[in-house]
Amino acid sequence: MVQYLNPPLDLSFAALSDATRRGIIDQLGRGDASITSLADQFQMTLTGMKKHVQVLERAGLVVTQKVGRVRTCKLGKRGLKAEAEWIEAHRKLFEARFEALDEIISEMKREGSDD
Figure 1 (spheres, helix red, strand yellow):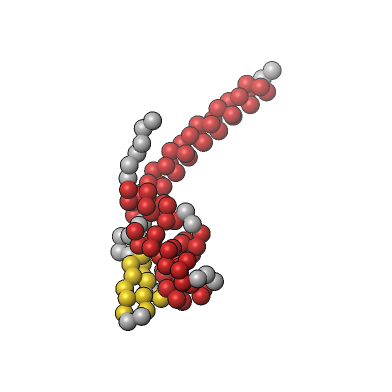
Figure 2 (cartoon, rainbow, N blue to C red):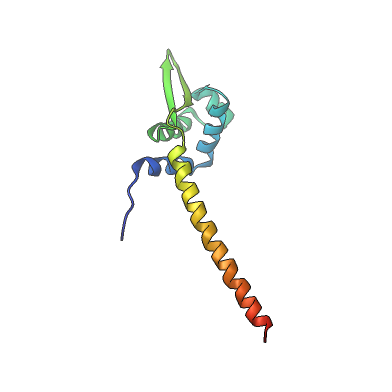
């Protein structure tokens, strides 16, 4: 079996596979937030929120900074350009295949109506 290795994409898609983590990204898109405020907003424990933030940090999607007792989160500078390019390339592939399938179905319908 062929395996395609792209660790940054793997980490990003794994991080974004969870609805809470996508929500965190949405929230941080509106402004920086402490882990405590994120935990309150998502109605979860600090420990649970820290785990979600760590996954996002490993993927480079979020960075944190601790000042005193407060750990503040903000969006990472890496962005999602590579992920968007991968998705767009595969979207085009699927679109082309569906168009080809539509043509085959249309042709089969025309042939069936000739009978």
